[in-house]
Length: 574
Image 1 (tube, one colour):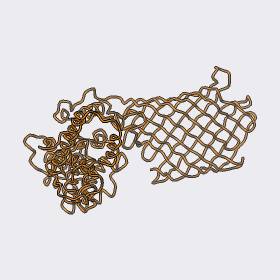
Image 2 (cartoon, rainbow, N blue to C red):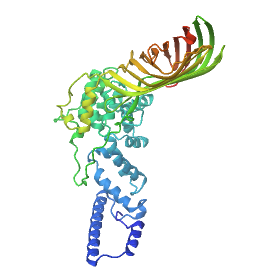
Image 3 (cartoon, one colour):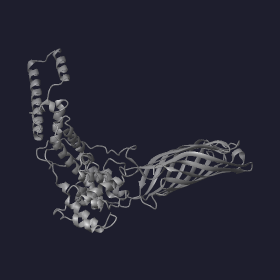
């Protein structure tokens, strides 16, 4: 079945050659002999690998779909990566190849249909934390593998946005498995899940090709989720550590001595994790090592994820009062606006949370005593974050687990330890746009380029999820500050100032100040702006108090414009 046949393309090549001048007979004979020898060697290799899988040449071509060369390749992959039996080594960077071969055997695509062989592949791959294989088994009714799937999902191993969450679906899975006698599931029902503190969640995206070592490192750091992932696939050392954590209640809502007694097993005499003893099976075809590959998170535009300091997208209404006071201006207007706003902070998850982005967008439209009103704003900044190191050396560097890691994972762990701090300095660059025509006051500005630098704290948990103090400066290309018919052009100026942002699960407060100064000192009267927005989140709703104060000299006379409003709406993201 795994023999090779000349393709139609090969026939066309030979036809073309027959019309050209032939080389001497002896040379032609030696070339054909070499090709025949290579073909026989390839056929023998394919036959041997196929025999090792039980797919000998006695099968008919109708047993598979596609070109015979595909079958030969599938057999070679199977013997190399997925040898027959349940005692083969971890697949490392070829986990997807193993999973795909299981799908082929399950559906009879390119290989003889063999559901039992497919299940063996899925079982072994799920034991090595390949999420797709766990899902195949779970969908087939294997409740134990549904628990594995839930554990991997919580850990962020795939299939969910990062950072993942511990949702109702996981509770139901664990509750059902616990009732059926799964003690690990019972333990996880009491997991105190904290995304910013769960060690396995912090590590999983840095060692995605070797999840077992990632989970072992987390287990060593007293993370019950890391221990549970290994214990559930039969690692005795991880079960012993999980029992100790259940006894003390570390990482759980409460101590569970009842579960600890059921989890307790004698630790292996060599005190190593079971997966470290696996070796490449005898008879497997040796493969040429793959060259070092660029990590999927490398590069300026890759490796991003959202973090907790997010506001919006909020949709709602804003009743607004505008008052302008000056030597020649005493006007007041009332407006009603409908609109939205959103502000998103993102940082990279690889290699060291060092890339940072801020994106804000808002728009409102409505009317009032002065006619049609509206405003729009947009900020976009990207830059780098410089965490303040809390340690200068890696405490795991002397351990056996660390020495067994690939060089790339060692470097990622070194960098993660070095930069593990909620405190950081940052610098960002981008642009800022705003336009507001509400009541008798028109205010606009386009800052490009604009730079921000400052200090940031990421708490992760309440009461403070994030705190940011930043200074900003940039070139104001065009802009205006008009009150009724008096104009104050702002283009060709320097804008500078600062802001403070405080974010928690229920409160978001931002205070910013800015001075717009003519590019030539004293060439134009400056404009001063103070803006405050403080939002309280109640369930899925937001109530925000908004204040804006602008002081400038339209028409040569100093005028102060003040706006006050209350945004009431629905918080679409949170």
